[in-house]
Image (cartoon, rainbow, N blue to C red; front, side):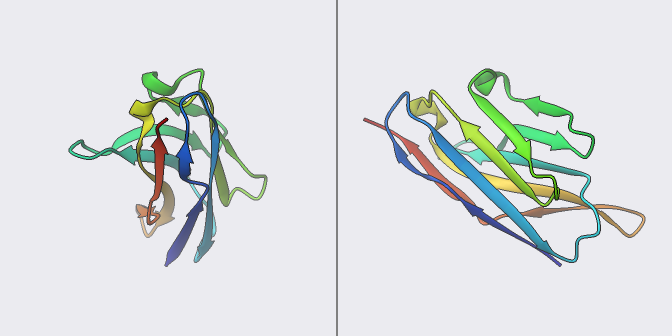
Length: 119
């Protein structure tokens, strides 16, 4: 199995910054992709940002230019630097990793970390 430990959430004022971290451990020989998703109350979970093994990144339009996803050299830790935070960024943020599994792949999710942007 794969375990994901997230950290870095909290309460921040509009315009502030936070950095989320997600460390993967367990039965991991390689990781195909890592990403951050978020879910606000009453809304569906949505992709915030992702990074592939090759380093290609993808961002939701709403966070482009404000958020940056990065991955450590050991490839088992992913970060989300969030700048110029807005109240609409308030949500529970989840880390996801995609690992090779049998003949295909499997997703593993973290427990989530709350981000609240409020004055």
